[in-house]
Structures are given as C-alpha cells and as structure tokens.
Image 1 (cartoon, rainbow, N blue to C red):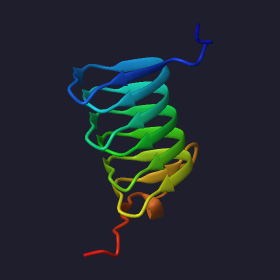
Image 2: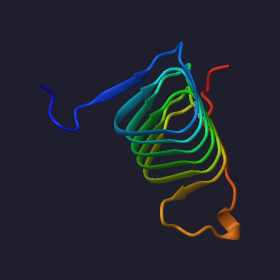
Image 3: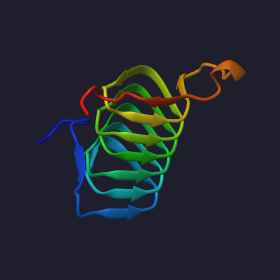
Image 4: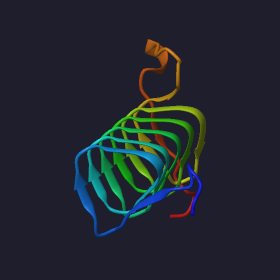
Length: 126
C-alpha cells in the first residue's frame, strides 16, 4: 500500500479535458487541458497543451502553455512554448525555450522598467 503523498496521476496524450483540475498528488499531462491546474508537482510532456493558469509547488514544462504560471521551482525545457506571465521562486530555462510574457519572482512588485519580457533562448544551430 502506497504512503500518503506518493500518488501520481497521468493524463495521456489521447486525453482532452475542459475544466479546472485540482490535485493533491503529482500530475503528469501529455494531453490537452483547457482550464486552470493546481497541483503539488506538474510534469508536462512535449505534445501537451495547457490553456489556463498553472499553480504548482514544482513544475517541469515541455509543451505549450497559454496562461499564467506560478511555481516555487520551475523548469522550462527547450521544447516549451509559454505565452503568459511566469511567477517563480527558482527558475531554470533551457536554451531553445520560448517565453512570451513577464518573468517575475513571486512576491516581487512589477515596476514599469520590468513590465514585460519576451524571451527566446534559441539554439545556435540553424
């Protein structure tokens, strides 16, 4: 029998959900979600698409996200395409990732000087 906190939920590539998702467990998404997601830890597959806000303690994003992201520890992989504001405590972005929105540490106030960031970490390969 698994101990508390060891649960893991998976939404496969053939799954499309319209509506908000709240999970006390870790969540792995390979399909499409139209709605807000709140979970302990999120792992997003490369073929996945999320349209809505993401709130997680930790998140590892590899697909498309259109919406605000808030995570204590956030990893944006090179295949990720983010359209929306990103709030984080710790941030890692791989070369090749695309973020179109504001990058802001959680709890920081936005000033006009850092109001908007468009970030593309392109690889040097043509």
